[in-house]
Length: 136
Image (cartoon, rainbow, N blue to C red; front, side, top):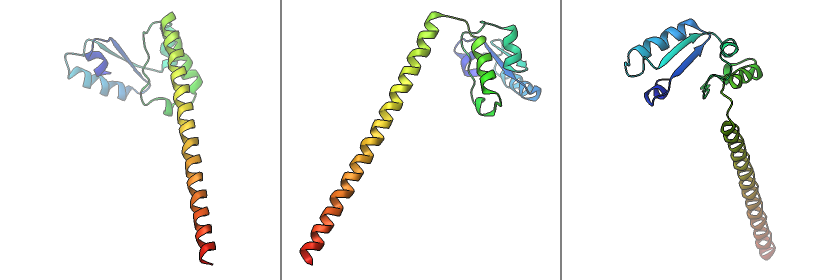
């Protein structure tokens, strides 16, 4: 949260645990350069999003999703709290396309590596067989 506030963002931190909110608040208060730019809320994104539809420019869920039981509801709430912008949709589409291309490239590289290894093994086996036939 604090790094985003340091670069000029107004940040809202949401956590279901009051003790986590209290700890985050105390850390933010230690840094006067960010304390006015960060707001902490105790609750869930699902509750918060109901009151803040199309409110935020971005949602950062860092180290959260792996702890969420109902990921579909969580992500739906995150998306509903985002401002709707045509260029945001384009960015999402571009990111998805880039991810797909990267995955395809990785799969192709793995296939090529497997083929090369198989060819090397076949060549080695052939050399061994020829060598054994020559000796025998």
